[in-house]
View 1 (cartoon, rainbow, N blue to C red):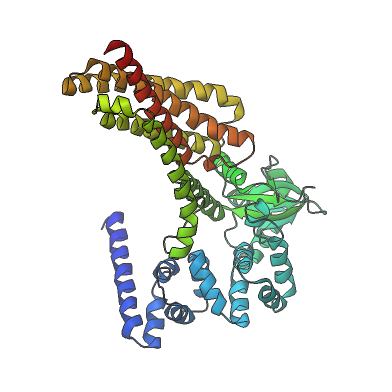
View 2 (view 1 turned 45 degrees about the vertical axis):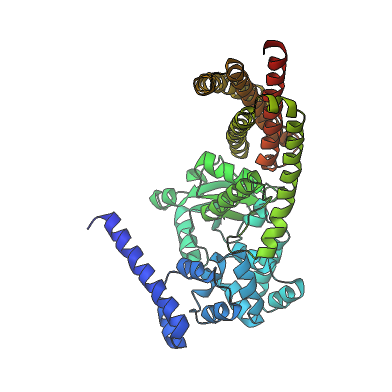
Length: 460
């Protein structure tokens, strides 16, 4: 059996188990549900819980999860479902779940709990764990401090490889996924990093100072999460140490947390580009979705009304050549599509750090050159097609020129808006397609109808 076949077979078994679970929830006993849940991966249980509308059913299923599976499921469900489940948990149950999670996940979970209840939960945890979670809660969630976990493996400078290996063995249960051992001095200042593979292959009698990597890539607790993600991508990291401003080691960020950041940032940028402003959960309540979408749709209504008023200025031209009413939509639509393409490239480049203000001129010239090439090619094609269909030389020329002009406008606007926002230290993704398409609609209608009006006056 090939690997793909094995994966498909495993997926089929998992889907069958989930379907059986659905049937059991509707008619089975608690014991049958508990046994079925034990055979389902926590990620699939979380996916199963998300769309359930009934709090009673969702909380019942969660309550039947095994003790070791509940924390993983709670970490993986959507924020809305997590909030609903946590709201029904007892303080004691919540304390058990927090104790089983890594500190970064525990802090994220507790951040969604009302402050008075959170204090009650923290009071029942062990002193060291409570202190570590409270420390993480002080950092903004979109910084390295908010992403890091306080579990890590560290050894003092001068320790032997044999001693370092023994420390790793001791910490194996408490610290998951040890990729690197951090070397620190007596004041816990980070001196070097020792990859686990290099540690295992080194001679037992050697000191960690002799085999560690002194070119340390680290971040401070205040580093933005986007910069953290860029470092992981650039240096192909598995973990990244986090220090205070003075260089003292506080924690680490692992690759799984960065994957979540990349997904979060991508969803956020996509939502802003589409005019949602922020990510909208697929099973969000309708009233929340209405509040999120309504302002952008209202803004779009205003911009389209302005575009309509521009068209109204050229009523006489449209009455003289009625086919212009259909042809002008081509210019506006093509400009909008071209603008969104440029905007997507620009926002992605800025988000990944590939575009900076130093590149602004070169990027702008490149986008204008692309727009010029596309505009001439498609303007010529549209003009010839228009002439073949309608036998109107003036209309064909105006269509081609207006297309070229609107492509250039689209490239200019879609490049300058995100660059300007980046220069102002605002989120470039806030330059949503609503603004770009508004500009291209206005310029498209105005250029096409304006040129046609001039042409009819002097050449008709």
